[in-house]
Amino acid sequence: MLTSIAGASVIVTGASKGIGKGIARVFASKGAKVLVVARHEDAGNATVEEIRKAGGNATFCKGDVSSWDDMQAMAQAAADTHGGVDILCSNAGIFPSAKLLEMSVDDWDQVLNVNLRGSFLAVKACVPHMQKRGKGRIILTSSITGPITGFPGWSHYGASKAGQLGFIRTAAIELAKHNITINAVMPGNIMTEGLADLGEEYLRTMSESIPLKRLGSVEDIAHAALFFASEEAGYITGQTIVVDGGQILPESLEALEEA
Ligand code: NAP
Image (tube, rainbow, N blue to C red; front, side, top):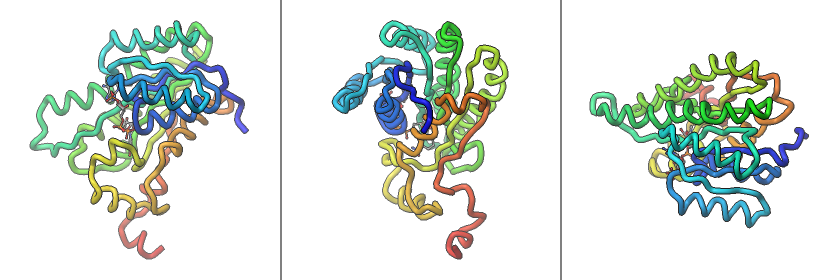
């Protein structure tokens, strides 16, 4: 059993759907006060309602992670509503597909702005509040795509996700003196609304290429984030954990078939 995070103030960006919603639900079920952050109010408020109905404590905060003003307002909202910021789960991300030669400069900028700049802005806004507490935990949702693997159409996405890991390695050194750790979860293919949009064929072939023969659940990622947020993980910083059902392991299709 990990030490309880009950009462901790947690911000989860991109928490209206998918992995972020899973993180918000799991952290709230452990007694944390969760600030649910997303751009669309209806979905965000629906997540908050779901958490409250299950007995949890959650509040919605409308915000775009690519806006510095919004990220500052987000951190302040957690301080005002939940008494401070203990844990940031920087999870919001987008994964539109565009092959390199058809990719516009705007396509590139949009993905980097949300996924990489958005992580930087969320962290930068929350750290002063964590300094007031004398401690903090930051968990980014990266990906296997970029840091380890590639997939046609996602060169911008892969760059943003690998960039997040470069970011945490230096941030971890700078934040250590404030007793703040920063780590990243690297999901494989996790069944979310965003992944469902990629179509049946994508989901089928992905499931088949995973040794554990299923797509991941949002709870699979939330539990890894919960570990990084725990007291017990206090000596781990600048590190990553792959949660992918073994997807990165087979060297070829035969490696899977022969098993
Ligand atoms: P999703 O189902 O599409 O949900 C994305 C969430 O992010 C939504 O709550 C969305 O809400 C929010 N969001 C998007 N742009 C935002 C912005 N500019 N500002 C604030 N919130 C924003 O996606 P997901 O599959 O859960 O993915 C979540 C994270 O996991 C992403 O970082 C993704 O790269 C990573 N990941 C996912 C998988 C996977 O298999 N699903 C694998 C590896 C990594 P609004 O639209 O209302 O803002």
